[in-house]
Image (cartoon, rainbow, N blue to C red; front, side, top):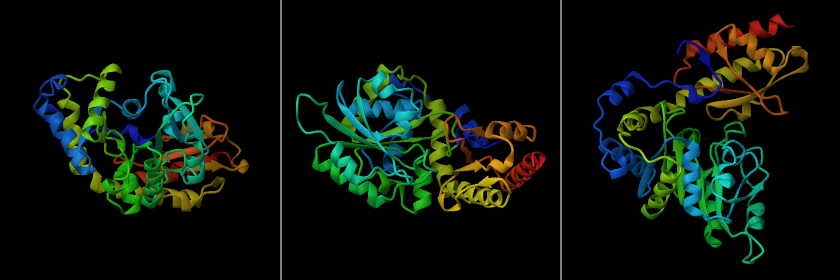
Length: 350
């Protein structure tokens, strides 16, 4: 890449191998179930995560919405966190497009929803209330320092869901980051869930797409929802070919992104005017704050860093956090450049 882009791992370009795979992919019409490359991707993703079937979707938002609406009808309720991506960053699609009522619980700093709060949020059967149909978890939790949810916790939530006849969906946009951080196979992390989604276009470096997995009946329902959302695909083997490279080549190197995030965080922690919690650096993302002594705000810092070809995203909320995300295109040498750029930007205003 021609810049050191830390705004997100969504900025990743496809690798040369992906570009070659896309150029030579065997194609068909997926609306007729006839794209062999896409069929292979969906089957491989399902097998990798221990589920019966998979469904390629154009984005994580489309995947989460397709999953939620396959579990819920209009007027039903989904339980999720107040800072969950599905609630705060998917344009209100759960209610706006699906007519699904949300029950928002307060996330803990590690991204977990308190078990007692989940139990209390599940509605009794009363005509005055919406029916609780779904619990949604996010792992790793992007708004909580990219913290992965422990397998034991997911199992506990799944047990509550099963006890009450409620489905469990896992928004695993960066699922393989969670698996790498915990040292647990991704299939084990989603085994307790009825459905899960993960992105190909973040740390796995594909240019587009996510996959939803679950049992065959669920995937058929989700496929119908995807069609309603304009996601009926034709020669989708082109992006699917890149996604297959993601599954075959990129998962095993995710730990490198985590190592570089730690390397970057440890270097930044030594720079005056920066506050960050190294204990929270578990995956490929973390947040930092500027101290008042910096004399500049996050937006001004981002402008200064951009002059050094370093891109960061200043917080859009009142917390004024800065999130940094490492990925395939952030090398060891890039980390050194980024640290030097931060030193110059903050020394300039000291």
